[in-house]
Image (tube, rainbow, N blue to C red; front, side, top):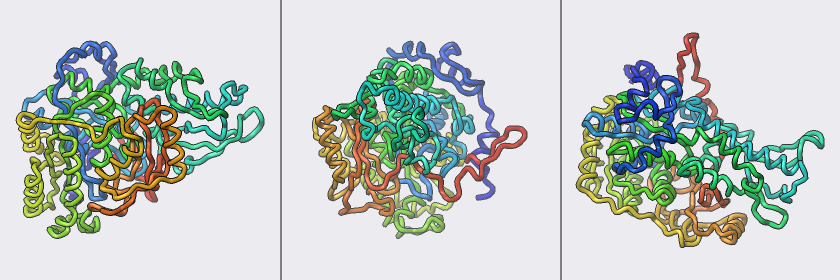
Length: 559
């Protein structure tokens, strides 16, 4: 594979159009943009209001099987499909999440698609971009600072320092910050207490930014954030601390969706970035709704496998925002399916039909899950040159037997041209198959019933158990009046179960709910399963070790 260029080499060789020209291609004037240099922009609030009455385009979700070290290519497929629609003369826009610095320096090295299906400027996107994540971090930590200051200055709200639930955040994988002690030193340095950090993408502020309709809605949601409980056991909110105005001021620009382009100059709205294993895993509602007003077809993605990202896209984002997806593209690779069939990563390039037959059960379960939402499915194989014809045909027949369209995608190697077969299948689906979208569960169910519906219906669990602290929290959350909101499940991404080592399609397993808390501003309850971490750590050899910049400012190692 050495004859292939790296993703960053392809991105750096690309000739980008000025972003105002990309915007002009879909009827957006320069005055509607707030430029961040030549190749990045934010949409003005005025533009968002201007297009409100436009009809909506069609909404296509891209999701995938459970991720494996062998790779799937969800973002690559999303970008390539958007480019392919452009090749077919369709007015298409893609709507993506922003990557997090933590994994970019930790395990991933970047998240902008790959090969000839990338969004650019790739380095900017994978680093500071337009500062949205920094704004979220600042708003989060302002609230933490104001809370600790309130306690220091007399504690008029009678906050119980043993019941503080608001955590500080940082956009970096840093395991030593998971549990810290603050307030050490003199009397003037605050009250000594245990504190915690989460990664910025796990902050409730990120969820709120992604689910807010506008500034008014943002402030309404920020005010509801529960930071602690007082000595009487009652919630204390960001509104009680008078923090909302300042937090909203920090988030004012971050609330505006960002515009960049693909390598083929397809407009890409990139905004918001919660992880799907610990948060709701979708780009912002504002970005998706804006894209629907600007284009005939919008291609968006949700994080990790369909058991996480797609479930949360449907049950949280679509439910809250009133979105009705028209089709879903389910991405798999031959290599990943063989990995699910028990083949080590080093051997996944070798044809092995038996292993494929064992591993395809993972794809089967995701098909079954997506069918529960009533949205037509197109399965696509992100192609590698090592895939055998026999393996591809086996998967094709498998999908068609289950009522799904199938297409091979070669977008990594060929960009938009490599995605035309997939785009045609999606177009055919949009034109000829009706979507009967419905959520998996009703808000009226109890929180336990919602958790168990997801665990049994989507994951395939036999039973659900609750740690004593989770039981207690569920009772309290219901008493506080939050029993009728959706549930956001925090679960590892590598398995359908809460045990990352169980590949394929596990059966007869138990899901253990370790912790439950309410994100009152976001409007959902978070249930943490197994050993999931809201602050990841760096691996033995972080991606950061391979990243460098030369005297001319050219970055290497972001891949």
